[in-house]
Length: 457
Image 1 (cartoon, one colour):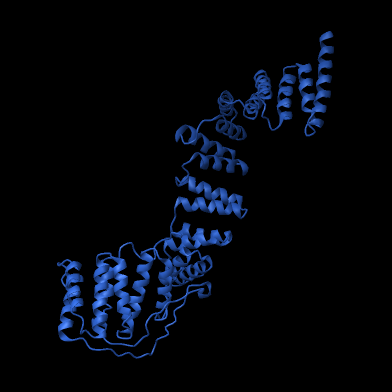
Image 2 (tube, one colour; image 1 turned 90 degrees about the vertical axis):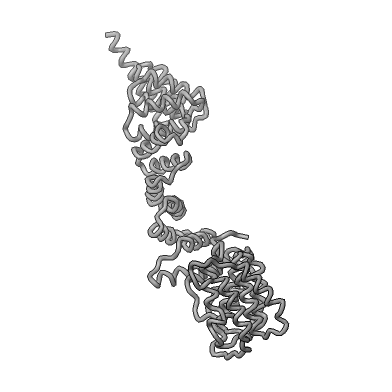
């Protein structure tokens, strides 16, 4: 069974107890009649839950309470909810008195049994014995129609909430659907409650219908839905793979509940819907809010900056992650990425230093060749040739032809034309470099011949 934000509080506390006692038959009086609750089938056919109010206009009659019974039940109520604020509730004394009354209830009329079971349920609520509370309230409801309809409706709702509290969403849903037959209208909170129950029963369709209703009505009233409402709504759209709708919900979450984690989620959704620049902006915002705290996140952000051709920022976050925050390991691969970012940002001096660190830790050609290319770019041709050859020796190169071209160009600049031609020809074995390599071979041979002719003169 799925877990979700609870539809009722973890503890039905004194405030709730006070509110339900306020709905007691002793205070409400005799009102309209209603029928007893039955079992409701939970199925997809229920769809979006609506208030039905099937019993409006029905009349109800039930026996009067005797004076002696009324005094005792009022005494029990005072133990549960003292009239004076300085007096603490004493549910155990209330339960003791109610048990005594139950032992002498053989002559009690139907309405007195309603009150006896009702207040016994309240006493169990006060001690958080929810199973016993449900048992008492169901005994009370069995006395229908001998109670006010408002009391019956409120009690059915309480029982439904208690089933939810006890991780029985199916019984909770059955009971609360029955409660809608007494309701004039559903509040947004009610629609959210039904959505959570459907979600726990893995009925995503009805869960989404009801959370959408909750959010729509709350927003229409000019109120901001609770964060948990948006989270449930977003999650349901995720599971439906409706990422455009999930995007709308995430944007609301960021507006009303700005947290780094939502920017991170927003970045992922932007990526899925093929909005890479927005994905980068959202991920960078998460970073600026301190929401990227793992090596994986920092490497991803740097890679996104490189993909969007912002190497300066890629280098900045990598340098900070490696040397300041120390959340990125200075591995050959990570140092190489930093060096590459610095090179693309035209910071050749620092790039070279990072390439050297990466090469010292690496046995893979692809991580070493970057150093050779950095040396070539800074006119350090001997070092470029040395590390280019080292990369070829190490292997694991994605583009062997590029490594051969690096060595060849370094040797050409050193006027080692025979070596240059050898490596240009090796590069030319790859069709992707055959044309440029052939041009360099011709040029190298001509340059060699030209310099030799000058030397003879």
